[in-house]
Length: 437
Image (tube, rainbow, N blue to C red; front, top):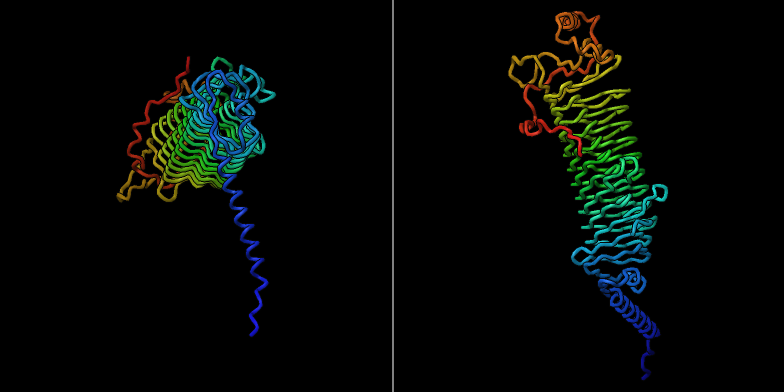
């Protein structure tokens, strides 16, 4: 009886199995080689260890002072043990990263060069340094702290960044500068004594959360940045807290901007954005709103500023409702050709509202008008403020209220809220700018 012929498929299957097993062996071998850890001790060269390392290695750096300008051109982890110092000797970039997937953790990085033209930085993430991580580092006495250029998905976490304090503001670099990036996460950093603590240019889909930005020109300076989230940050003792310019679809939520010598939050040429639940207190101008359209401002506490809101230059079609305007010397400074309606839902609260609530629904029965004829005249002729308490000026104010032909266009809240939305508003009184020595 003839035996069945052997299946011609079986040798092929065996060959495939051998190929798979061989490939798995290669992967195991590669993984084992990528797990190496190198140690750099005092007196040794970090750059030499970088050159010896294979992609994916970890380099542990013992506590010491290393005077080197590092170039990292392969995926590596550099981890400091007890916070070693890497000094750039006041030349170029202290650390330059040109590879993707590089992590810098627990280092003190200092003494970059001084060239604004070359953008010298403590850490410079060059184009292509995608997925870089910089965390738990101190960046001190660098021109720019961190420069991030055309590097996507970077994470900058829990770093302390200070600039060259003795320099004039215009001669310093920025704390963290982003240019042409996507999906950056900038969280938990403390930045001071730089030009702008965060400078964001042509960078989209980024998250900025839990940062402390102070004693600089701007806490944050946004230019041409879309679809970002700015959340739970503190900006104080700057010239300007948060400057949003040429921006679309940004969410600004649960932040605190206080004691800035000019504005707390600037909204300039901004559309389709949400600004909610922020505290803006003790600034020269709480909000400066210029050429802003189709935005939502709600739940904000604008407290004890010289000017609560400076509204200017075609800012219209914004939904401004549910905010508290309390104890500002001028609640709103608005110059326009027609009334600007605010409120309409919850109503804004105005601490200088003199109306009443007869039906007890929590909303005023008389509209609130932020400005009158006397306000506008005093802005145009500042010396007139010397006469504000005079009978003649008070009579002019009364006449302007009674005769519509003399009335100045104003921000008008048809049903202002009688009580503030934020019951803890008084905690933000008397937080004013003090010039640092």
